[in-house]
Length: 124
Image (cartoon, rainbow, N blue to C red; front, top):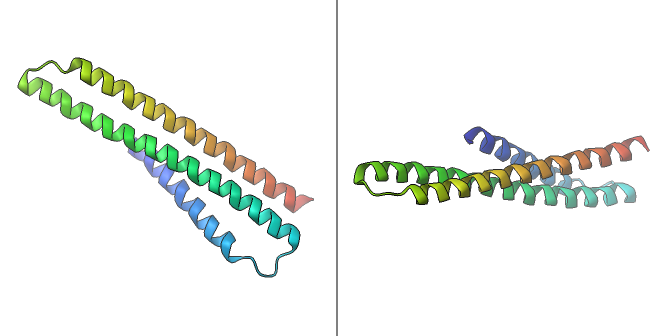
């Protein structure tokens, strides 16, 4: 999960860097290029929000797994039955993990869409 969070943070930083580059390059552009920049910025904004959702889900999953591990140790040491609590937390962790993966997949689709749009502009 840590590696996956690292991948998401890397993608997030690349999106932020691209937004900064696009926001600086508005002088000496044709009207068509300016319009394409606005479209690309809008798409990058959607990607940014989607990565943020994926990161939030994956970090929530990681925190929940930490609570599960702590609960399991408390259950073993104090001899109270926390099995229902641990099972519920596990289900929540898996839902957060699946949601993060789904958001990541959506961001990949948005990235491919932006690449196709830029290829159309270059070749036509």
